[in-house]
Image (cartoon, rainbow, N blue to C red; front, side):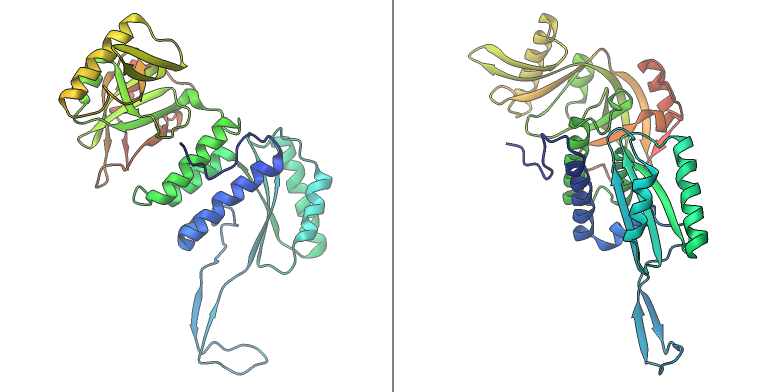
Length: 335
C-alpha cells in the first residue's frame, strides 16, 4: 500500500494551497537552510534573511551589548487559483496583511504562467501602493511545477527522505492536473545488471509499490551516463499465475509479442535471483531504446528515480522524434 504525504481527491483551491504549504513546511522541518535556499528565490534579489552575528553592535539610543544575533523578517502573502482568475481588488486587499516586515512579497500561485497584461496591472497597483505608503511590496508568480523544480534544486540525491516527500507532491500535482507536461518528461532508472535484457526486449520492470509521476520517455542509466532512451507505448502491472500472465493495463495495450517478451524477462530475472516469476511488477514498454550518452558529471550514482524536462535539457519548445532526442542528449551533461 502506498503511503501519501498529501491528501488526494479534492479539487478545491484551498486544498492545493494547503498541500503546497505542507511541502514547504516539510522542507523547513527537514533542513531550515535548504528551506531558506528555496525562499530566497521568492524574495527580492537584495534580500538577506540569514542569521547575522555581530560583536558590540552599536544601536542608536541604547547601550552596546557584547554581541547580538538577529535576522531580517519577511512575509509572503499567497493567493492560489486553478484557472488564472485573480483580481486586482482581491490582491490589493491582501496587501493589508503586511505589517512591519523587512521583505513583503505578494505571491500568486497557479498551474499556468501569469498573463503579461495582468502582470502589468499588478505591477502598476504595487507601484502606486509603494509610492503612496512609502512601502516596498513586491510580486512573484509561481506555477506548481516551478515550486516542484525549485524545491528539487534546493535538495540533492542524498536527501532521501525529502526526495520521497517531493516525489509524492509531484505525483499529487500530476494526478490533480496542477502540472501537465508528461509529454516532455524523461524518467531515468538504474539499469546495470538488467541492461542487456532491457535493451534487447525494449522493456523495463520495476517494483510495483514504487511511486512515479507521469512521463513519456524512459531513460536507462549505468556507468555514469544515461545509456538509452525510449518512448513509452504501454505500462502494465503483471505477474505470472499458474503459467498464465495476470495483466492489469495502466497505459496503452499489451500485445501477444509483448507477452512473449515478458516471459523472456521473467526467465532472465529468475536466473539473476529476482522475483518476477512470483511477484507483481510494473512493466514499461517502449517502441525502441535508442543508444545515447547523457553523462552525469558529478560524483556518485543517482539515488532512485530522476526526472528530466527534455525541453529544458535540449533548450527547445517542441521535442523532435526520440532518435533525434537520443542524438542531442549526447551533447549534454547533467549533475
